[in-house]
Image 1 (cartoon, rainbow, N blue to C red):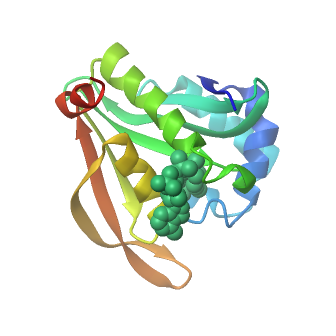
Image 2: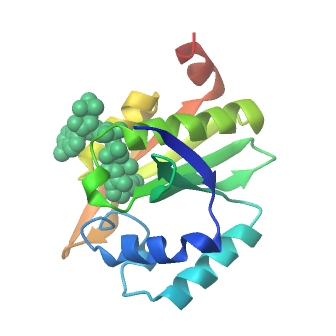
Length: 174
Ligand SMILES: CC(C)(COP(=O)(O)OP(=O)(O)OC[C@H]1O[C@@H](n2cnc3c(N)ncnc32)[C@H](O)[C@@H]1OP(=O)(O)O)[C@@H](O)C(=O)NCCC(=O)NCCS
């Protein structure tokens, strides 16, 4: 399977709308995706991402033309040379096949090699063990917990803060 990333555009509106319609797929992602959202909302959302210089948003494409999700960097800080990693594979049939980790590697490579970032970090619900495993395979390490930061299915859950620094990333590449 070939995996690549390409700039997210409004051409991905329909696929994006389908991903966030699957409540199981997005249960640990941004709260703003949880209400039902139509194509118009998604198109405006993608437009806002494209205009926002503090985010770098990529569609994840497999086998040349199947768009399975999106990933990238948000909260990009030039001053601190830091950014937050995010990823959603919206089509569950493509989970646990290595696609998320591969796409993550492309994002981290861009972040550290092209954007010259010093630190890339993320937060993840402690219930989302598949995501945590994928992030550990990328070289992220846990650096703390945010107590009861996430409310899902009638309960509060902790979030884990993970990070990787440029020297840790470059040491993993040799
Ligand atoms: C999180 C996500 C991006 C991971 O991508 P992916 O392509 O499924 O991940 P990979 O296949 O590269 O790696 C997943 C790993 O977790 C493991 N895993 C899956 N479920 C697990 C669980 N419940 N407990 C422990 N490990 C688990 C897999 O076996 C695999 O590890 P392995 O390669 O050592 O066998 C994807 O599942 C996804 O988009 N989920 C929904 C959205 C989401 O949660 N985004 C993250 C929000 S912080």
